[in-house]
Amino acid sequence: MTKQKLTTPDMTTQEKRRIYQARYKASEKGKEKYRDLNKQWIDSNRERYNEAKSEYRFKLKLAAITHYSNGSMSCAHCGYTGNLDALCLDHINDDGKAHRLELGCGSRGMSSGTTMYERLKALGWLPGLQVLCANCNTIKEVTRKRGRDCEEMMATVKDKIRWRKEPGTT
Image (tube, rainbow, N blue to C red; front, top):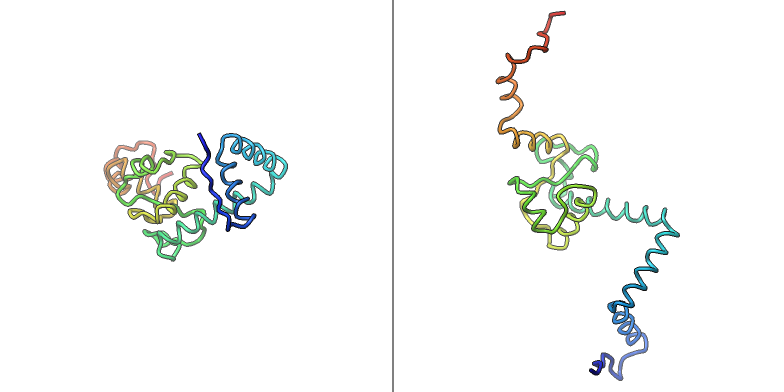
């Protein structure tokens, strides 16, 4: 089997070199070599690598929160804007599990947020998401699982709680 020639006589040496390097990096031998070189660099520059990775994750989250909040970077329910770390994406129709599976993201954990942001960005920021603060997101999820909100639960169980002291009693 003969190799197809990818270069032409009018190409510069630099262009030919780029083509050769791309083919080499795509080969198994090249992938292994660059994987080893990358691992060595990370091992010898751990602090610099961690800082760059942290900055990358932050910028990715910032882009997602900015997009899904229409630039306001605030909670869709209560309007909280205090800290980006307290804001998160929420599936409006409570179909997060199915959506994460469809995108090939983890169900929960440290990497699922970054992976989700990467996939959403690559696909052009899919619809069906909103920005909520951690409190509103937790309240929405607990209410969904319970089937009713906190006030309804309090009205139901108020008289059944024996250890609860009434106001004004000692």
